[in-house]
Image (cartoon, rainbow, N blue to C red; front, side):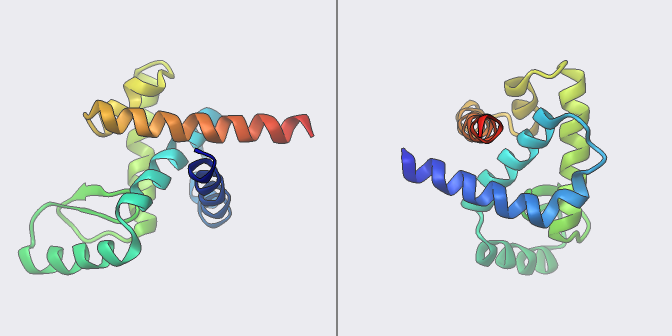
Length: 136
């Protein structure tokens, strides 16, 4: 359990440093944590090497494929950064439509309840970490 949490926190810290400028338009901290939670999960399940293979597949078959770190479904080539921007926009709209309900937002991104459960655990780990930092 602690190994999983430390992985989540490590990736959150890395991704926040690397991609926070792409998410600065979103003022709701819970929304940002949700976006990072999905990013962490997608990165874990589709490491860089696998994503590179998906790009090769995309260029060969030339049809809708999930691309980038956020595994965003698209019919056109997008970079990982573009996948973050597109996914964050979708997540933000779904979050607003669900009035900030985390699980409902996750299920709109990927309609699997086991996926939602995993993302929610990551989200909770990051929120706990942030609360811990606030108390210091």
